[in-house]
Image (cartoon, rainbow, N blue to C red; front, side):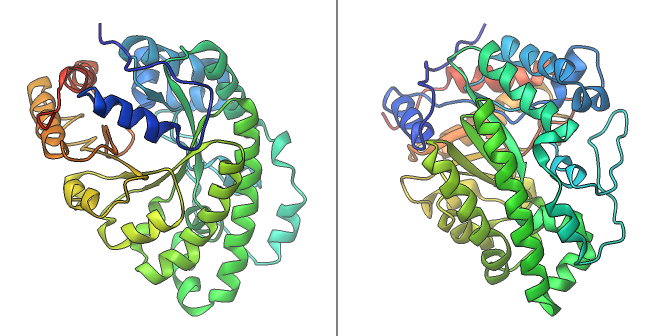
Length: 352
């Protein structure tokens, strides 16, 4: 059985950096795949049940934690929680993540949404209760993380993706209002998750990858900066995760002041080694084994080879954590996750 890398204290904005550098000094790497959905398969449940029943949710996450002993563990990735909590129409497939289809939206709807207290929402509370169980039920050797939707992505869910991109170009004042509201809701959710025991907050901005650098700064990074400062005052690590090719907005992501940047796979267009060369030493870079081509459809040998090659390519960078480019699909073979973890644990830096 693979062994965890270290025992972590309770919190700290720089904790991930300290731990990554400590592992590097010993010739090792922290290993933290983004995984949650394979746990649903492992316990014989389904995504809909796990996303709506915190006991099932925790059981799925604990099964992964017990089997693979990652250095950092997250619940199921879910981009619908905050939008659903303010009453946006949400669809709950049995074996896929909840989604928020486009629905009618008027700017004046925000006034009604502001009256809704997220702390009374059943799905918000389901994730908060899952976080509480993770905090008390998982080993101290694992950092416990939580996901929140990013400000641009939440605004796009509220308005509809097409309307959001049009608004940020043609009606920026209106769109800023929606982003400001989204940030308020995200920060309320963040406070609940931190109170429940979250040590790492990962801000998910998949929709923002389509923006240019100036738009990304205006409609995502400046709001993430506010969220990050709230977390920093609580001693909590923050992660900025954006799917797709983010090479054109890396400077903006780092400029938001987060503790860590999580990047998508080489197949999405991300050159992790090139990205790391431009990363400040006090910001961790995480990634980027492909969750579909490699982890889902590859063999354990494929996984081990690609993981070893990536680790070797990143030897010169102390501020690196081995991970996947995004959350693993539910059907990811467990033997592939085992190969990823085992390769990551056994690898020793060639530069030392």
